[in-house]
Image 1 (cartoon, rainbow, N blue to C red):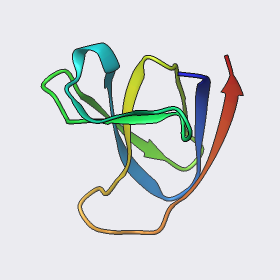
Image 2 (image 1 turned 45 degrees about the vertical axis):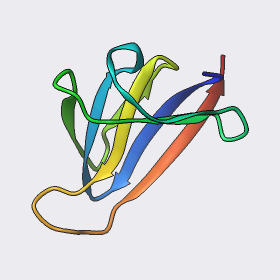
Image 3 (image 1 turned 60 degrees about the vertical axis):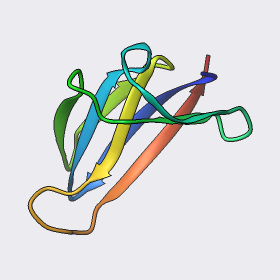
Image 4 (image 1 turned 180 degrees about the horizontal axis):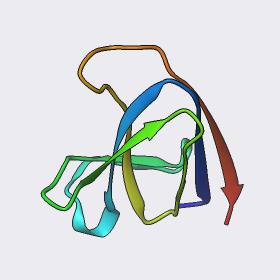
Length: 85
């Protein structure tokens, strides 16, 4: 709620689920200390295949489920920038 996330995949691949927080069912309530809440996957969730060199910008109202594996476990390196709103 306080930050825009810019997530950049430097190496490897991952699958990331994205949906609007207001259309998702809350699983763990928002915690102001870590600026995060957790939601259950919904039918509104879209999945992005993120590969080396890809980035995504996630706004505070975007619920996202990063670090999902594609087919099998594999190493990935990702850089996350937090941009204060």
